[in-house]
Amino acid sequence: MVIKKFEVGDVLEMKKAHPCGSHEMKVLRVGSDIRILCMGCGRDVTVPREKLEKNIKKIIPLEKE
Image 1 (cartoon, helix red, strand yellow):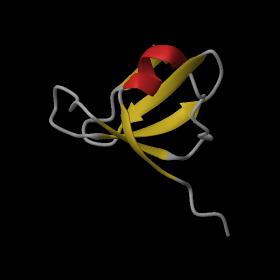
Image 2 (cartoon, rainbow, N blue to C red):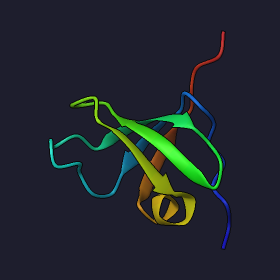
Image 3 (cartoon, rainbow, N blue to C red):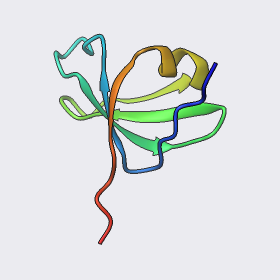
Image 4 (tube, rainbow, N blue to C red):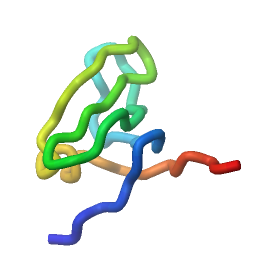
């Protein structure tokens, strides 16, 4: 299995929507567990990396200045 590369600040587009209806999550912390923030309702969730990687549709990288 290939580990997907994403960093703090990146936005993840998920395959399944959050209960609020939003498909976009922002990465807050990276490690064996990933902490993400729903861009729709602001809910903060910690998910194991393996489970999260299966549900990512697209990674939108943070624009660096």
